[in-house]
Image (cartoon, rainbow, N blue to C red):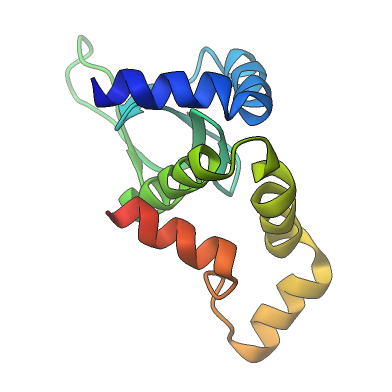
Amino acid sequence: MRRNLYTAIQWTWGLPQTLVGSVLYLAHRKNKHFNLNGACATVWDKDAGLSLGKFIFVPKQEVIKTEDPSEEDKIVVSKELAMHEYGHTVQSMILGPTYLILVGLPSLVWSRHPHFVKKRARTGMSYYAPVFEKTADKLGKK
């Protein structure tokens, strides 16, 4: 029941980001996927996580080769990062169509803009210091 409600909210109130996430999901449909509390998580080759409505994308940390050719190789992802990205999906449910402006864009700028990358390196400031990142972390851990 909770997962159905989660999905319904993401596809209505969180429609803008969920639509963008679904397009990105389709572009990576051949990648490994797993369910994370109702969110559709995709493992990708990028160096950062991303959350768009019901869809989250997490980088693979490691591939563990199996000896048995009938078994698939194991892909390892960061549980902490996956839960952080899941926290962003909860923010999406709360903020609805304003999520992309209030969280998505600031998070993208904070993570990638050279000014902020240098500032974090220079000051030792945590990536999770801004309220939109700190809140995602807390929501993902609940």
